[in-house]
Amino acid sequence: VDIFFHHFNFNIFSKLINDNVGNYSSYVIMPANLKGTENIIDRLPKDKVYILDQMHKELLGYPSVHQNFKKDLYQGLKSGLKQIKNYQKAILLYREEHQPKGLLEGFNLFCSHYAIQNETINTLNNRVFSSGELYIILDDKNLIRVIKGLKEQHLILAKDIGIISYNDTLLKEIVEGGITTISTNFNLMGQRLAEMILNNEFAQVENPNGLIIRKSL
Image (cartoon, rainbow, N blue to C red):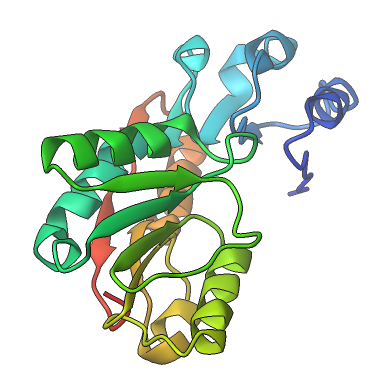
């Protein structure tokens, strides 16, 4: 088993596939949010390709274990509606170049359905935190930046500022007494994909996702 990283760079993605045509018995590909990946993946034997994590409509001819980001974020926020309503404003920290568009769509749909005042930002630079804000944070570096910023402004987590982080980790069980997360089950994702490869199975599986409420909300 060899692992290669494309770092959201289409040229690297293309080179990795072109350099490895015919080298492997199976190809597990994470296309992320790159455009036009179907044209590159088409160079591989179709019966040896599996799509993982993000799914594009152009890749529906391949077996996959994937997340439904729009539905998952919407349902996760809906599960925490009671707690979310303790805050005056929900703020999504979202960068289009690295994150699935479905997360933005799910956030906007939730806020629209439940009349939640909201804002979408792409950076924390020069951000001044205000009591009553709830931050939905999609990456771990910005999670640490928010926590650090709250301490600098002497704001209290959960009481003044709420945090929901995307993707659960062991660290989030511990940091600041526990960070609330919306997360897919990554262990199950890997297990299910391995079964598909070993059994030469064609399936398109939405991996389960849920809200884990901890002290940050």
